[in-house]
Every structure is written in structure tokens, then in C-alpha cells.
Length: 260
Image: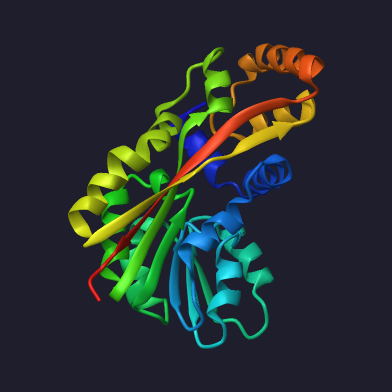
């Protein structure tokens, strides 16, 4: 699979939907609730959501900011933006735009009604952009005094990636995000924010059948058809032995604060 193919799979709304569904069904920790608790969004805030997908964070945040706040959402997938727009609650101020996050500065200047934000957020997305440091600069520059920037990324250990690595080569586009938090985000936040907090997301996925795990594996950016039979055999053995297959799927959230 080429780098472009992996990038397209990462952004495809149908594959994203299936990954989210399976994660929600079998994870030990509710990621959305965990994240929203730490973002601590309040009524009246203006929030920028970069790489918003189909609105997993934009929609609940819209409910939290209320009629006096707003959410400005951006994603490269027009299909994801269309899905998000179909879910916007009546009375909410959500503006959703399909664009590459590398063009975020232009979108804020020319398209978004809101220009400054109390929270700039991105989950499971920033590492897909080659210009991620530029995007971080734009997000930070769009913050109001006292605002905060929150980025969530995958983090090791990741049991399914480790299982797949036994039978196929894991591409750099997958390995990079697993190191993105401590090696890229932390140095940036240390340099550019008056203070920052790091939160580690600990999660165990318990899958009750081999077919479900293989279905999830097929949606990933590191899927390799040649490895599927070997992975199925390993998972089959464990399911027969213990009744399920468990693996860790963790994350890294960093929140930086600007001077008030």
C-alpha cells in the first residue's frame, strides 16, 4: 500500500466510522467522555476543531458552548464535513469547512466567522499533516489571551499495531504518530506556552471474536492482506483460550495555556 493510499484510508469517512464504532463498543474507557472532561469547555466559549472528522468532538462541544459560543470545524474530507453538518443541533453555532489543515490560516481569515478562540483543539488528526508545526503555529496564533491549545494523539503501547508488526512492516505513517506526543508535541509546547499539562489515556480493547478484530484491522492504515491469515490464527488461539482478545490502545493529550 502506498503512502497516498494510507493517507486516503486515514481520511475516508466510511473507514473512520467503522473504527469509531468498534472502538466505542469494546473499549474499557469512553474516550469522548475522558477528553471532554479534560478540555473543560464552558458555556460561551469559541472553539476551533482542526481535523474534526464527522464531528465526534465538534457536536458535543457545540452543546457545551451553547447559543452564546461557537465551534469552527475543519476537515480535509468533504464527506465527513457533510456528515457533521447533518448532525448540527438546531440553534448551535457550528461552522464546518472542508479544507486541508495546512490552509487553516487562510480559512480562519477568509471563511470562518470567528477569528479568535478560547480553545484550539485537534484529536487523532494533526500528525497526518506534513506541515503540523505550521498548523500548531496557526492554532496558537488564533488563541485569545488566556486560551488553550489541546492536541490528542495515539501513543504506545498499541497492542494491535504490535501484533501486526509480527507479520508485516508497519509504515512510518503509523509509527510516527505513536511517537508524536513525546517527541514532537512536548518540545513544541515547552517552547511556546507558558505552561502545559500532559494527560495519558489508558485503554484496553476487549474484542469477543476474531471476526470483529479482523474487521477492525481491515479499516486501519496499516492493513496488510498478506498478514491477515497469521493475525487471524493468533487471535483465534487467544479467543479459544480466554473467550476474547485484549490489547492496549492508548493516547497522549497535551494542553498548552497562553498568558491571560
